[in-house]
Picture (cartoon, helix red, strand yellow):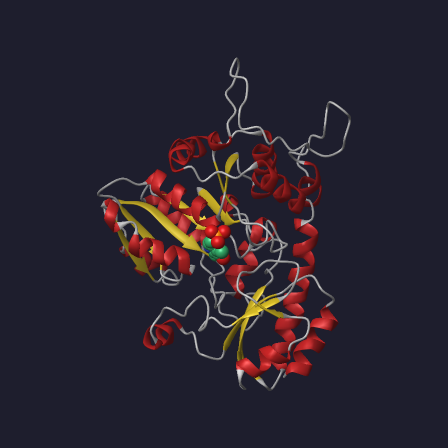
Length: 373
Ligand SMILES: *Cc1c(COP(=O)(O)O)cnc(C)c1O
């Protein structure tokens, strides 16, 4: 039976407590299990609380199986390393989450893995960057912080033609809004610290794929060891029960705010894939089936520091995807390590603000921005 995401988010993987008839999954903190049948062990990624989370996210992502990690970077790097060996090449789109960008520059070379970062908004140019040794294509959409849209189907088509494995970082969209496996992508990763956790109180990551590829990633994951403990896994499961509701409100809030900001004279450019004026709108509409997400960015005409100080509801913070609205200045946070020239090339000005829209009342958020402006 195919269920809606609302129903899946509540019920899939949540089997309850067969011993006492409790509605929710018990927390199984054991790190030592009887070994007569299957050997359960937290670092084998097979304990009940880990599996409950994986079943839920795999259902939401239309994947066959998955692995729950202790951070988004653990999910990303383990998936990547599991697909690559010495002498291989990995092709990245050039707009990447800072942590991934940094890891690509600092880790891969030491293991003899070659990489390129190429403009994916020109698919022809992107395809030309494929080498005979290219084994993985890695994309991320919407991108950080300008919410640029990569044509997922277009990239998947190119990868299939060349028999290359594709990995996507689906963090910004969330499993509610975008399901890349349906569009031909092989492996979907999330920083579960963001929308999956959704309450700014836990750190985790997930990789979702086919049974075959998950087995392959799991073989490496057991060596790298980035598994999640039962207590945190339970907290993730609990959070997932409201992920659809949360994202519905975040999608609505972000769309309303983006439209408001676009008309506000004290604000310059607004970046949100749901705006008709956005260059990625047509593709986003096709691939972001659930909504355009809770992330947006905008240019302030005035002083960003003064504006941030005056906000009363919206909090100045890094990270994103929580129920509470947060705002950050990329020049001081995610993109602080870039030189001014590099930032200029990436289109990130000193007055750009990245806004993670929460689930608060839409009018309260607009009024907060209005009074701060
Ligand atoms: C936060 C983030 C990550 C890294 O996740 P961690 O949980 O911090 O390891 C990766 N990709 C994107 C897009 C992110 O926002």
